[in-house]
Amino acid sequence: MTTFTETALTALQLLTQLDPVLWSIVGRSMWVSVLATVMACSVGVVLGAWLGVARFVGRDALLTVLNTLLALPSVVVGLLVYLLLSRTGPLGHLGWLFSLKAMVLAQAVLVLPVVTALTRQCVEDAERSHGEQLQSLGARPWLRSVLLAWDERYALLTVLIAAFGRAVSEVGAVMVVGGNIEGFTRVMTTAIALETSKGDLPLALALGLVLMGVVLLLNVCISMVRRWRQRMDGAGAEPVQGVLA
Amino acid sequence: MSTALQLHDVSVQFNTHWALQHVNLHMQAGERVALVGANGCGKSTLLRVAHGLLKVSGGSVGMAPKLKQAMVFQRPHMLRTSVLRFVVWGLWLQGVSWQEAHTRAMHALERVGLQDMAERSARTLSGGQQQRLALARAWSLKPNFVLLDEPTSSLDPHAKREVERLLAEWVTASKVSLLFSSHNLGQVKRLATRVIYLEAGRVLADLSVDAFFNRPLGESHPEAHLFLKGELG
Image (tube, rainbow over all chains, first blue to last red; front, top):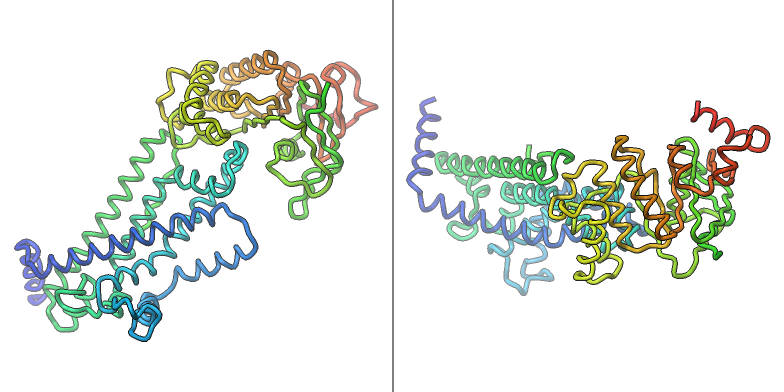
């Protein structure tokens, strides 16, 4: 009990005294996850919106693959990105392995199926509900996917927040491709894993508290988006489900 | 008079269910045709086929060249935008320039009495106002063929009267062709010149309004007679 209390008190000291090591890890983590989320959303929202409206041969098979990718273990993503970026891999010439760029890429690959699948579902539901009204005005599938995605923008904002939550709490892939190098590629999750194994529990706990705080903040954001959406839409709005439970 | 719409032996199948079976319909320009029948009889499917939203499983659909259609749905979906932009978007999708679309949209809103709400969010409007907005958008497209899918069925009596008044003004003033479905037989009497009775995807009666409501149908169209008896009590 004493150990736990001491650990907690030291962790709080690290947080309140703005420990430079701790906060540089937090900053790096945020930077990597924000970039990865932006990259994944740029591709995933467009692809998901298109998949929500387009009908073509092989669509069902593609959706099955996409849904399977949702459960892709992060260490497997790490391994694939590692193979791509290793000296003998197809992207080896970039020299990205064990760098922040590799970590951004790995997180983006991990989050992309989440963004694509959630956007696809959101836009497909909208298409089923009122796509024909846009079709009636002459909107072809591609334009319809853009308009429906825009119309569902508040729900997609929730998808974006959920994607960031997935990215920031990821450990396996960034550990494999980043190497967890101190002061360079060490982020919150990899630092927690390392410091716990080393027995430096206060730093691990302090980082854990920050990570929990980030997830809590994301859920608050989702809740605020939901309320904002209901206010903008008037009484007729359907509630947005929280994604980060 | 010229032909506005021609459906020849049209059938539509959803999985194993036939929504329409061997439907023939010939509409002259300026005609006002009401589709009546019980729920699930194929009224909405027929409207969607006529509007080109559904592909037919059999038969053919012919439309007059240069025919410009607009459809108003039972529950118009309000895009997350302002009342004015709701109409502007519709025009823009039809290839009208953004600036001209604004002018036409304002004119359309004035026509349905929503000009003072132009900057309000379309989703905050009441059901009746939303249906008037949908009418404004359809009207702004300047169609010569209008399709309405139970346009007043989800409205309260006051909103119903208001929307019907606007519809009547529109179709009589501009001589557009009108194809609409309705459960409201009073509305059918007031708006239509011809009535088509559907049952299980088949046309079982195709009569003038006068013949449908005022002549005995018991022997010539027994199903339509039973429907009328049931609806009118």
